[in-house]
Length: 228
Image 1 (cartoon, rainbow, N blue to C red):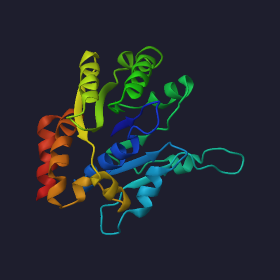
Image 2 (cartoon, helix red, strand yellow; image 1 turned 180 degrees about the vertical axis):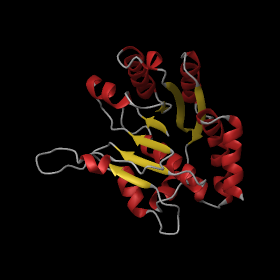
Image 3 (cartoon, rainbow, N blue to C red; image 1 turned 135 degrees about the horizontal axis):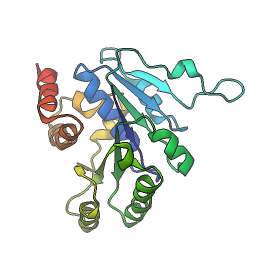
Image 4 (cartoon, rainbow, N blue to C red; image 1 turned 135 degrees about the vertical axis):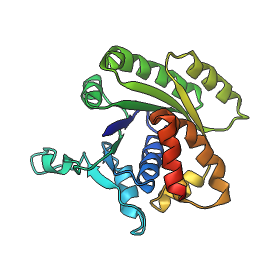
């Protein structure tokens, strides 16, 4: 089992978009997948409720759902025994204590960053907290950065690109700014489950991320299994 946490302290950077699309990619490739929604807004949970019955099931865990007495339902957090990938959609504005708690059992952290001065500034401070407070390197947790909602002809993208390359962390991939992700979300699917020519470039943009998350040979096997 591999646990992948999608997180950034700033809201609106596309954590849910990445979490839901990654979950659908794994599930549609025959990998038993669980999507854990840690965000009180419940966007990932709403997406799962929209998921068509003819699509491969993704096990849902609504971490924020409470019982009387405001205690998280422990039984609801149990994962299916055959789970192979767990995708965790983190909330925005998390405290240092919550950050430490969330990363204790994860293998990989993905940080989406938008190409704006505010987002770049916020990501800088969050990554420092992740490295210093979270001690991710000492814990052996892999951390990768994803440039999200990017328009390459935008001058701000160049600033984001320089910032990401300056980090001692992998700049994994760039996802473009497109309504394809919105249309997929509204249908409860991921872009890899869409067969429109207009999403082909978006699928290509996910390849570096998949190759980074998995061994290269495994990533190619996943794609071959999906296309067969």
